[in-house]
Image: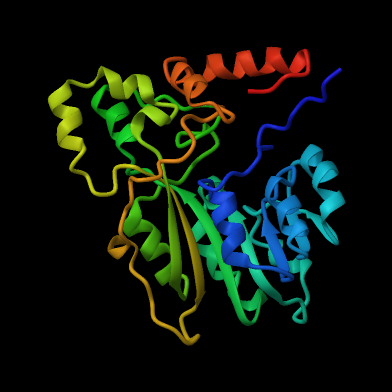
Length: 283
């Protein structure tokens, strides 16, 4: 019988936040990973010879991720006392949080609390979903802001950020962004393809002028403000549409399959995925 896959267990390709974060972290680093989940990123960090300490609240995920870590702390990042797990001597070369801060009540304070945990020349590598994507705008224009099981409107997201908000999040916490990359998806490559198709063609054409409308996720490398190097402004980064990445959330290696899935709701896709897993297959 196939093993049930954890909700946040996935594989990384080149146009994912995980792959971009791994590139920014580098090889052989001492890493603190916030909200590791079942270890989709953790496993890849270990393959890069990193030494990982993880913070995670989900007991099922802890059981899975422990095999990749030197230490795992059962920890609620919404609890202001979570830094008490560490001594003044605990320092990390990189602190990683891939799609985590949007799940927290106070991501601004959480980010500030990372500063004392950084080693000299240390950095934070963080990814966030982009609430300014054209597909989300299409949902609003259609009067349909329905939360999903995952994706940009994951029902467990309680904070939403566009580019200016992400920039200020880091600036206000005492960091400066020194590197950033965007995960690009066209609206029809997202879980909201149906909402996009419902818009009148002239509205879709108008939204095509939105410079940041295809940014699905933002991946940032930041250092303390006093560290050497120039600060980078997210709005100044060119947005390329030449490599829009995977065709659809849930598609694996097939653009034709991705196109078909873009006509199916995320809830239905999850049902199909669950049925396939029962017979040992995966989307």
